[in-house]
Length: 185
Length: 226
Image 1: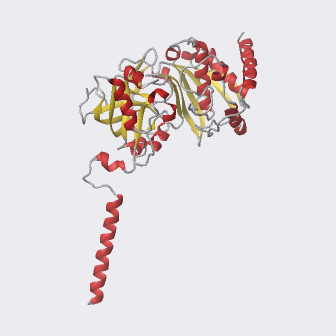
Image 2: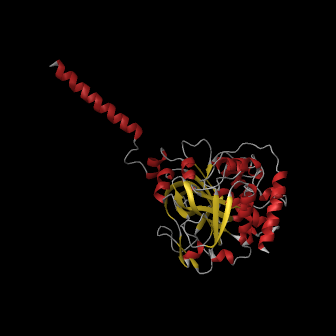
Image 3: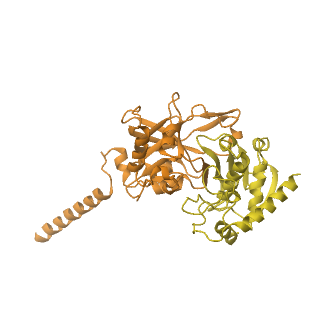
């Protein structure tokens, strides 16, 4: 069942990426620390596995895999401090919806990071599931060098806060960002 | 005789020149702590080091009115220190692998509702990089002018069984403040405009009126608080 859902996500992602406008304002890259390789292996902590929507983690990783040249590897439960992404579900303070924090560095690059998702904060308002997916894609975007794109730049998952609409572009990386990622990995 | 006189003058002039050079580049020993640090403080560098390897997604404070409504306290003053932040106790391993906070110590000049006395200190928790120490941040930040929109997170629990442990500097009772990611703005002498720790001024919504300076940002908050 999970494979079918992921396959569907990949198909939708491919279709979505074809619809992304080709013109874009240039944004610098990387805006955050780059990962140590082109493969992102990831794991779920027990709290994330038992959270209300662990699939959003798979979703974000599959978007990275299917829309860029980077790849992903699901390693299951978290135990190895060198796993690239540890997914957490916790209550974050204030208005924070999610955070990406590099925990183990490798020179100037990041070897392993925590991605922490606050479902209660994200679920304020409407469109909860697409909103969770946006924040998950957003945090993984940070893990591959993307920063926040202010309104003066282009529209994509790297905008802060709730999705402005159900348009798929808010759960995707912009073609400009993808070009940067693919040129690096 | 003339040679001895001339060399004496030369030595005195050299000593005077060196001492003047020293005065120009070093703060006076008797200057207040914040004043001594101001010449090196950089909000741009502080923000960069605070967020190295750390990024947040957050619900923005949509307008000055929203900021006033969402916050428990809004202050303007000087950043006088950065020290250890809150840590987790109990089942701490359920909440992440690293301490993610620093305490920004703000000496208050004025607060929006006037509830904090001038000169009092407010301790704000700020999300920080796991690779930057509070000492590193303090070196860059002491003396910066600051406006902080603060949430009271005294009752916050990160995860079941996880407790929040206040650092020694923070009073054990009373509010525990957290700076909203887009509610902490700073400026030093070398910064061209106000700088956010986790947000850029260009990310503020149109309702803010495109503030570039702390005066403009503060004025927007004051107007919303009327």
